[in-house]
Image (cartoon, rainbow, N blue to C red):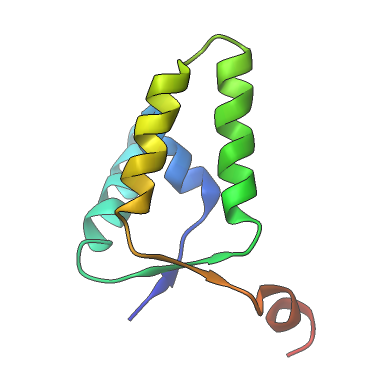
Amino acid sequence: MSFVLDTSVCMRWFFGDGKPQELAYAGKVLDAMKRTNARVPVTWGLEVANVLARAEAKGMVTEARSGAFAEMLEGVDIEPDAATFANAFFT
């Protein structure tokens, strides 16, 4: 079984901010990904990269930290769904 991974949940892993229930949910999602894969829209990678780049530009994080996070994401089973747009509007 797979599920859709939202960028906001993924960014909770990186920043560790938000309400306690949001952080707990993000942690549960990351734990679940040890047993299954996640599907993402094809734009997901661009969204994540944009958040990281903006955080670096604002001096919130270092390029090294962003790079380490990107490496971590490479080790997680995430599948881009090329049919996201068609499935959202035409089914």
